[in-house]
Amino acid sequence: MRSRFLIVCLALLCAGLCADEIPLRVFGVAPGVLPQIKVRLSTNDPALNAARKKLTADAAKALQITPPSVMDKPRAGASGDKHDYLSQAPYFWPDPTKPDGLPYVRKDGERNPESYNESSDAPRLNRMADTAETLALAFYFVGNETFAMHAAKLLRVWFLDPATRMNPNFDQAQAVPGVNTGRGIGMIESRSLTSVGDAVGLLAASTNWTARDQTGMEKWMGEFLVWAQTSKNGKDEAGAKNNHGSWYDVQIAHLALFVRDTNLAHRIVTAAKEKRIAVQIKPDGSQPLELTRADSFGYSRFNVEALFALATLGEHVGVDLWHFKTSDGASLRQAFDYLVPYVEDLEKPWPHDKGRKAQRTLGSVTHRAYFVYQDERYAALWKKSPDWQRQRDMLLIP
Image (tube, rainbow, N blue to C red; front, side, top):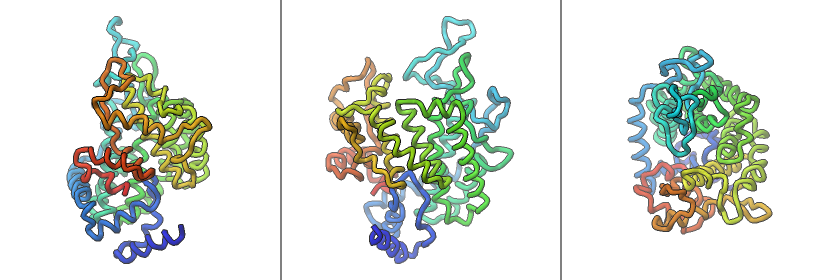
C-alpha cells in the first residue's frame, strides 16, 4: 500500500502538480482515484479526452448560472423564516373530494408539479450543488481559476452570506399540505450536500477559496450534522428501513468525514452491514421494500446507488461493504446482479411492474460495479450507454 502511494506521489510530482493536493478531501469517489485521473489528463490520455471536453463545456455553461438562494422563494414556510429550507412532498395531491383539497392524499409515483415550482427550494438546492460540483471538478482537472471563483460564489451565497444563507436544518422539507409542515422523509433531498462537500474538497487548492470559507463551511456542515442526528425529522429518517435509511447513512458518513469525525463515519458504515444490507436485500438480490413502490425498478436501482455510495465511503474508513455477505448470502453485488438482466435485455419482462412499465437504466452504478468487481459483463453493459466515453464517470471511476 505504501509503495502504491509513493508511486502516485511521484507521478503527480513528475506531472508538475501540487503536492498539497495529497491527500485530497473528497469522499464520494474511491481514495486516490482523482489524482491518478489528473495525471492521465496531464498526459492527454486519449481515453479521457471526450469526458474532459464535456466537463469543460459543462463548466463553461455553469459560469452563466446566477447563484440560487433559499431567499429566492416567494414566501417563507411555517417557521416564518425564509432562510429555512422549504419543499413540498412530491407524491401528494389535493383531495378532489374536499373543497379546499385538504388534507392532500398520496399517489405514489405521480409527481405533483407544486413540489418543484418556485415555492420549493428543492430544485434550487439541486441546481446549486450540481453546478458547484461541476465547476469544482473542472477547476481541479483543468486548473482554470474562473471555474473555482464561480463555484466559491455559489457556495458562499447558499451557505455563508448572512443575507442569503440557508439555516442548517431540514425542518420544513417535503411538507404535506393539511397534514404537517415537514417530514423526516424530506432528508432524501439533502443528499446533494455530499456533492457540496466534495466540491469544497476540490476547491482546496484554489486562491478563490479562503480559510474563512473553509471554516464557515465546516461550521455549517457540522451544525447540519448535529441537526440530522438530534432532531425529530433526522431521527425519523435514521429509522427508515428502505432507501431513505440508506441515503441517510450516506449523508451522515459523508458529513462526518467532512468535519473530520472519522469515528462516526466508521460506526455508520460498519452498522450498515446488519442495519441496511441484511434488512434490505434477500439472498436472490431482490429488495422487497423497494419492490412495493410504483416504480419498483427505479427504486431498486436508487437503493443500490445509495449502498454503493456508502461502500465507497467505507473505503475511506477501512470498512469493506463491497464484499460483505450476510449469513444467508445477501450482498451488494447480488442486489446489482438482480437488476442487470433487465437492462441487458429490455424486452425481458420486469416481474414487478404493477401495471406500470419500468424505465430501466442503471447509469453510473454499472461503471462503479465494474471498477470494483472487474466483471466484463458490467463493462459491456456500461458501453451500451449513449456517449459512454463522454460521461463524467470516466473521470471519477477509472
